[in-house]
Amino acid sequence: MVKKEMIAMLLAGGQGSRLGVLTSKVAKPAVAFGGKYRIIDFPLSNCINSGVDTVGVLTQYQPLRLNTHIGIGIPWDLDRNIGGVTVLPPYEKSGSSEWYTGTANAIYQNLEYMESYNPEYVLILSGDHIYKMDYEVMLDFHKENGAEVTIAVMPVPMEEASRFGIMITDENRRITEFEEKPEHPRSNLASMGIYIFNWKTLKEALIAMADQPALDFGKHVIPYCHEKGAPLYAYEFTGYWKDVGTLSSYWDANMELINIVPEFNLYEEYWKIYTKSEIQPPQYIAAQSVVERSILGEGTDIYGEVYNSVIGCGVTIGKGTVVRDSIIMNQTVIGDNCEINKAIIAENVLISDGVRLGIGEEVENDTAPHIYNHGLVTIGEKSVIPAGVTVGKNTVIFGVTSEADYPGSRLDSGRTLIKAGDEQ
Image (cartoon, rainbow, N blue to C red; front, top):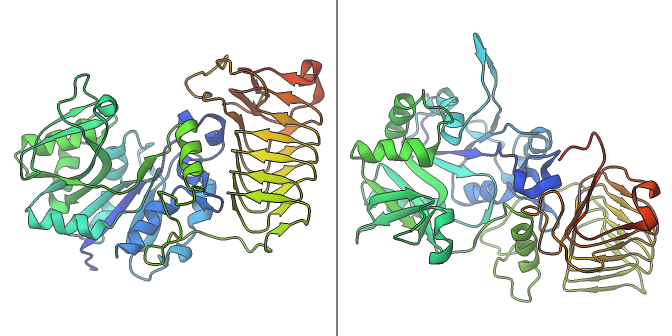
C-alpha cells in the first residue's frame, strides 16, 4: 500500500450561479481567467508548487470542459504513476446513485479513494478561488500546534464579516468558537474554505455525520470535531486571495492583473501558474492597431484598438473596433467598427460589424439585478450578435440572436435577452 503524507481533495463541482450565463454551460472552476488560464489552475498549481502530488478533483456540474482541461494532469506535472491527479465524478453504486449534496458529502463519497493512499493528512480545497499559497507552510503550522483540524483564515473588513464563516481564537490561534455568517461578528477572521485534517479525525467525523442532509464542512463536520474536543487552529493567510463568485468580483480580479504593478503577479519564476495550453500561433498586432495596458492570449489577431482589457487566446478584433475595460475569452470574434465598453464576453462568441456594447445610462437589470450589475454587459458563450445593434449597460445576452430580437436595433440598459433553449 502506498503511503502519502498529505493528499489534496479539490472541490470543483460548483455551478457558480452568481456568474449568470458564464456558467450555464460550464462549471465555475473551468471559467477562463486572466487570458490563458482557467480558475482551477490556481489551486492545482498551488498543490504542485507546495509538493502535494496527489489530488482528487471532485466534479459534478457540467464537468466536460473541466475534465478535458485537467486530462491526466500533464501541465501541472501531476501525471504520476503513484498519486497524480484523479477526476472523481459522482458514480452509480449498486442500489443507489447519488449526486454530491454538500461539500463534505462529496468527500465522504470518496472515502475509498483517500483510504487507498492512507495519508496522515488531507487538505481540502475549493476550486474557485484565485490565490497563491504554500500549503506546506500551513501543514508545518498544523503539526507544530498538534492540531487535528487547521482552517486557513484571512482578516476581512469588519463590515463584510457577516458574509463568511468567522473564527474566534485565543492568543495561540486555537479556535474557541466559530459562527457561520453571523449577524454581529465578534472577529474578522474569515474561513477561506481551505482545511487540513488529520486523516483519522476527518474519517471519523464523515462517518459519524454521514446521515446529515447536504453534509457540509462549515455546518456539520467542523462543529462535530469542535464538540468532540479536537484541537482546531486558525492559520492566518496574508497574501492575495480573491473569491471570483460574482461577475463584478470576477471583472475586478481580471482588471487587477493589468495594473502596472499587479497586486497578483502571474509571472513569478518561483511560483509558476501552470495551465493546459493549446498550440497557438503567436499574437498578430496590425500596423495601425493600438494596444495599451492589456493582456493578450496566444493566437490573437488585433486590427483595432484595445485598452485596459484581458483578451484570451485565438481572439480576433476587427479594424476600427475599440475595446475598453473588457474581458474577452478564447476564440471569440469581434467584427469591424465595433465599440466594446466594460463587457465580459465568453468563449466562441461572434459579434458582427458595427455593434456597440455598454452604451447609455445604468439601469437595474430586469431579471436578475443581483447578478447583472456594476454597469457590465455579459454575453454567454457561442452567442451571436447581429450587425449594427446597440446594447446598454447591466444587460445580458445569451444565444444566437437576430435583428428581430433588437427592436430599433437596440437592447436598452437593464434588459435580458436569452433565447429559448439557452437557459440561464
